[in-house]
Length: 346
Ligand code: BGC
Ligand code: CA
Image (tube, rainbow, N blue to C red; front, side, top):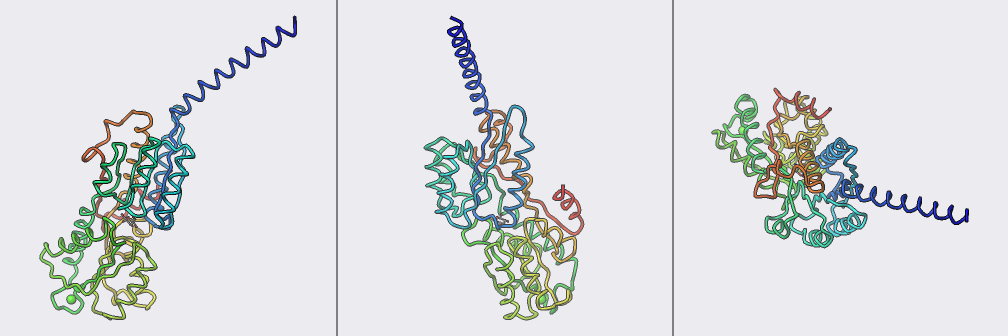
C-alpha cells in the first residue's frame, strides 16, 4: 500500500515537472530571438565594424523577456557557400536571418529556403534587385542610399579643392583625377563615382579624368592599382576619389611606399568613416570622407529583427516602399571628425 502511494506521488511530481517544463519551453521559444547572420566576406573592414555594432545592439536588447542569440557565418566570397550556410542556420533553429549577399543578383535559393520554413530575411548592405525583394512579403532591406554618399563625397571634395589653390599642382585650371572603384555590380560602386564627379563639376570646378581602377573595396588591391597609376601618370594625379575608405587608404599606402612627402601627393577622399578612415582624417592624410552609419544600420537591423519575432514595434519603423530602411549618410570633414571618432570609440 505504502509503495503504491509513493509511486503515485512520484508520478504526480513527474507530471507537474513535465507540465512546468512544457510551459517554460513554450515561453522560451516565443521570446527567443535567434538571428543567423550570413556575411559575404568578413575580411571586409566596413562589414566587420557593422557586425560588431550589430552584436552589441543585440546584446543590449536582451532582457528577462527576450533572449537573444547571434550566429555569424562567413561565405568568404562564394555564393554557393553562403546558400549552404543559410540552410545550416535555418536547420539550427534561427528565427530571423540577416543576409549580406555575395552576389546581390542571386538571392533566389536563399529566399526559397527561408520561405519554406517561414523565417523572415533582413538583407543588408548589398541590395537585392527590387523584383527579388517582391518574391515574398517577409523580405526586408537595411542599407543606405548610394547616390547620397556620392553627392556628399563630391560636396566635401569641392569644398576642399576650392579652399586650396595648391591642389591644382600644374596650375592648368583643371583637377586631374583618378577613381578607385568597388566591386563591379555593387549598388554603391558606379553610383558613388558618377554622383561624386557630377557634384564637383556642378560647383564650377573643371575636372580631367586620367583613369579609373577597380580594387573591389580592398586596401591591398587599391595599393597595387595605385602603384600602376603612379607609374603611368607620375606627378599628374591631383585628386583620388575612392568608393570607400579602405581603397583611399590603399592609395595613400602606395605613395608612402614610394617615400613621397605630402607635397608630392594628391588629395584623397573616401566613404565609410571606418575607424582607420576617421583616424586618417584626423591625421590629415585623408582630406575627408562620408559616414556610412554602421551604428544606425545595426540598430535598424536589430530593432526590425526583434519586431518580427515579438510583433511589437513594427509600426514605429519607417520604411520606404514597405520593405526598405535607408539610414542617412553624413559628411566628415577636418572640422567635425572629432565627433565621429568619439562616437566610434564608444
Ligand atoms: C561599403 C564598403 C564595403 C561594401 C561591402 C559598401 O557600402 O562602403 O566599404 O566594402 O559596402 O558590400
Ligand atoms: Ca591641374
